[in-house]
Length: 577
Image (cartoon, rainbow, N blue to C red):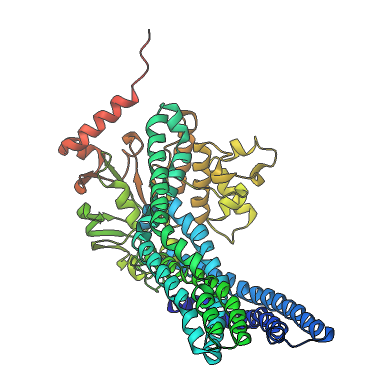
């Protein structure tokens, strides 16, 4: 368990050590009053008289011990929390670094619910274990062990009797932990599934309401919540009997000591004051042992949680080189590209060349692999086999920074940060001047809607860009790409949310942007790409033809079918009554 924590605790290990030491001091101070109580009681059992100053001094010493206990324990908790929260920081930073190296496709597969749970809920739960279980657990078990040793020194028979409840309680604790561990995987998997389902349910609320799918959607929501409830209750039902046994037996070290010890006193085999001393010591042991064993149940959770956090991020990182861009030109080459999601291959040996300064369009039915092929160029995933190169340089040999400098990606779904529109555009080129940002916004046809806002380009985008329509968000995203001015541009349905009134202006802006660039464009409306230098027809993960529009109409039946469907769709209208 400590090996799991060690890589993340780093220099703050000393705070945990000091926290443990201070808590040990605090527990000793909390135990000491029992000995002072014995010093008051013992003379009375022997029929001796004690004066008031003697009693008063012990009362003062008890009060001092309680003050020491409070101060030491509070300071120990302060140190343990400093260590814990810095360890959590290191853990989050480490996981963030691993997450950044994951292919974006893997991150999407994890789901926002699960990632949110990992970085907030799961890691926050580790705080309790680090701040309390380690220092308090160690302190609460170390001091009772010392006291039990002393009990054996005073009278080994009473010492043995005191161990019986401990053995019973620890056996029950062990059975509880064993039973709990067997169900822990299912419990945490159920919790992760519930988080993802809740977020999906909330995000899809509009679709649920519009299409009257409340019943189906709520059934799935309810099933996952009930499943989590059932796993939780099942876990506790298994643990509760054992928990009841150790919680009731462990604090009662006098369970056998009282009747047997009393018989020993009556038989004259042990002095009454010695039995009183051992009794007082046993009262100090029970609560600490119970607390320590309660923390002991947390240690497997700490080990499990950190292991699960690491396991979630242990996918092979995205293959990335360290070199800058060293290509001879800006030609893009897909060579025998194979790619699949898990066990299902979706691209089967695709070969495609994009010459510098030309526009290549990908067309095909939904699911044919167009978007996947485009995302592979921006290194969204690693290939199963084959290669993608720019100017003869494999993209996996470049650093991600070098690749991103060469390629701009504009998709149909763009995310805006909850900051100003100006800062959202500035992401394309962080060191750009304000004049460059304003020019990029103008070229992306943003001025029309920016003028409606009182604060113009300084308007807040809102969560996920909710202050803007879908088409307006795309124009902001297009402004980013314009500002970036990368030599290679990938457009994945970049005008998908454009209304007819603005589509012409957007296409004019796109024509200006892609001038003298190497362009890969995906479009379902074939009329927008019929003038492309090359059109690649995708079908079931392969490129079945690549040529100009006119030649494909003559030689490729699949393309002609797509074109006819596109023409038919463009003339569709609502039938008059």
